[in-house]
Image (cartoon, rainbow, N blue to C red; front, side, top):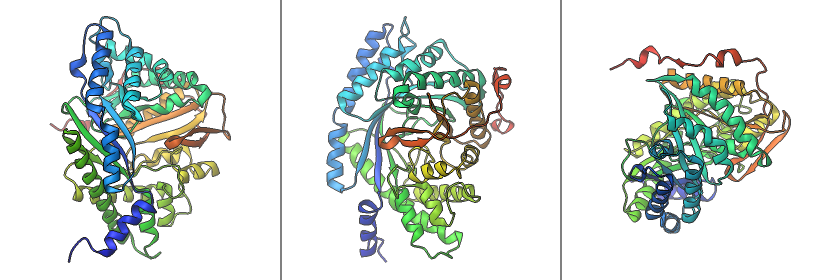
Length: 455
């Protein structure tokens, strides 16, 4: 029996044309380690030249691949070595200047975003790390395409609570400096535990220290495809049948993505890196992870059973994906960004999807508290407490977790934050009013868990 028959061809066509299957991003991952100089202007000059050398044809080739295979490629992106490392060699730290260089280079090669304005501080900060962290609000105010990520914790190192405290303040400052756009700067800033160095998705993408000179990483998406497949099953299909169907769909999505990724890498004459098979939703109706929960039989995202549904979905996607590719990486699973998912937006608006429920769901999904708009007057120590909770979930469970929280200046519960495009819009969600201040001000480092000692 052949795998490719008339029905499978029609199904694949419907995935693309009807159910929003796309290549969410082709991300050029690029090392800038050879750009370090003792003069920041020289460093910037080398960075600009290297990005142009490798990425000048990225969008052109992506369009050619899109035309060749008739599958949409939504975003073209670049991820670079954490800039805290690159700028640290300069006599005078000027990370805002380097952020502007990245932004200009991204604009020149016409990519949507460039990630890597980053620092890895899970065990402590160097002088360069501190300088980068302090520059984030101004850097994200003065740039359009730069994304920033900070790794604050890991299973091996524990949680850097000094940096967690600092990030609560930096997130508020970043939102305030971009208040005219509902704090959009904070939408391009993410805090990680166990950050992967091969993630193609923003805002968390950077080129990991152990990565090659360059690589092409692919991010695919298809929540609409999965939802449609689940809806087509009988209402009384058991969970084993449900999981198998999701695995089959994930296999096809991943196979499509790897085909595109390898062809793109071949055109660019660079190595193929990984395929991240995450179900990343969009604000478009039908392209929703929350919609999958409803197709499974839940009244809405947030109902009791939502965490179990997400756990099964995440696992089935990964099982199907790894059968299709030997190079699955990045985050790979299901994302639950509130503002970027039409179903999540509606559930949050109705008040049936709460902040605490979202935190519980992060225990079993691919990322964490993602694109959640909260009142602008939320204390910075409360934001730090949110970050600390999410870092603990990742540290204990040996998984990647993240926080992308937006304290929207001047807005309160019941108001709306509007960003447009893939960032979408979100209702301002209520947060716990209890103080975390004394706890956060302790500082220091929460030690790594006992199961980190596994050598």
